[in-house]
Length: 157
Image 1: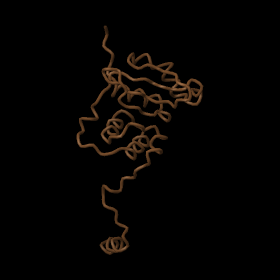
Image 2: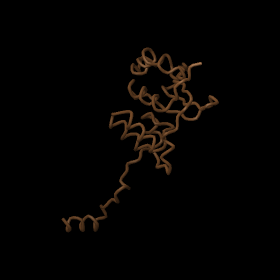
Image 3: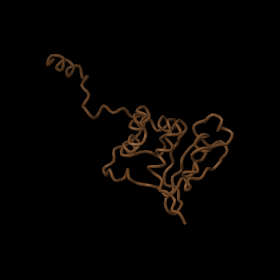
Image 4: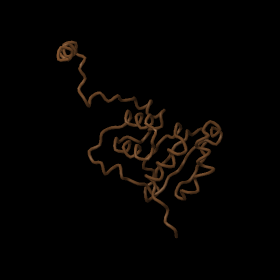
């Protein structure tokens, strides 16, 4: 075993542990739906809510390390689900969410914008856009779990 390690060291094959994390380009991450989801602690939060290991793995390939894990606890006062009405036929999971689940989230509005890819625009208390996340490849349960963890419940007035 020691001879194998020595040979790998001589050949320059040894990769330091922890430096072997595969990173994807910004475009690849955007295509996967991770625009704006930049912190690895957000991927850890995603892993708590979403049991799809491939999705979590893709998230980790697109994230950057953050120094304070409390950032992952950030919640937003509302969200806009933006999508092109003409493209909805290509996103049955998003249609299912809009038709059957959206009413559970009064602080989430649906906005139809021509040629817009499906995305969640997360809002702060002043209704200012704080983060945008592409959700093209998300399943309905991923959207539900993410919103349950990241968007505050609207208070009854």
